[in-house]
Image (cartoon, rainbow, N blue to C red; front, side):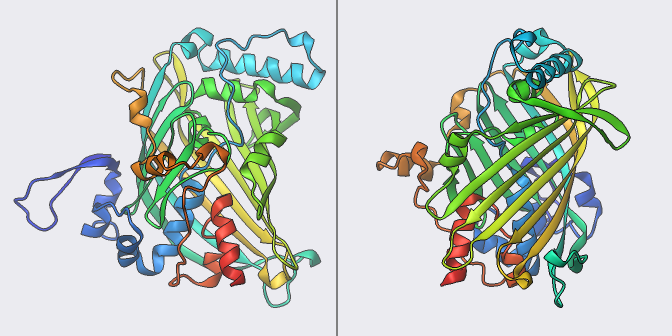
Length: 419
């Protein structure tokens, strides 16, 4: 990973220090080695002028895969070694598996000694769009044909993640020169992208999914401490115990609005029977967009294979993985059904714990969100903070239908479709 960007205008010019390191491959490839890709774009106008026809794909990849959240807040416990026999058999089995995971990850003492964390890594994203057509309805059991495959070589980039217990986190991610930021100050989770203003997620602040992909064993243990064991399954030739966790109704209600209902959000953890470590993280959620006539449904499924565990200061941290995403839009006539698949491959280059000087001030929301809050908007009561989704007129209709998957974004998009 490179932390300095060469001056592409003048050979004798000074190099620029990058906020987010860039993979070496971006310098070796003529496709990526341009002045535009070495510069971060943080507003809609500059991003659109650079990416052109790739704008929709960049938005899709970053909007869905960049910084997704876990269904509900994690209850942090200093010790989760509760009595196993005091619970139903499914819950008791899950607690036993979680205890084995804690031991495999480094032990409770090692996990409790971590107050903060820093991670830096590189990623590669690619998207393929699938859709029904030519009378091939999904309810007829026919295979969906590939409508288009966008930029098969993928988009490359890097990210920097900062985290502090119990529930503070911040991530900056750059893909092909396009930067997004997201974070939580413990009260509200927020996100910034080049095509949206800063906006807060509905409901209580929730943890970043990327942290639970093998980077934060303590959070994984706390998340699944209230799960149930639903059996065993072989994943990629690895025998695993499967733990299941449903989002609480109160959390789903807090994330819903008058136009968007979060119907369910389920998480599965696949823990290796051989190593005791988390081998795969899967979650799926279903949204209903209320509209006159026919409601529209969106189902998002994410599966993350977690690989290459290495011991850092006595704690086993995953250093590689692959996430596959499926977006399915249905509820209208069969011509309106779309399925889009995306994939992200990531590797971790650096990890460190207990970062000195990392205070709560490092996780404050963007200034425009704070100004809205000062004007009387309560972000904890599902406030949108004045956010409105812009229309991306340069995108094809089929791409715009799956461009944004946040509950807030979908509400605005479906409203635009009706007008």
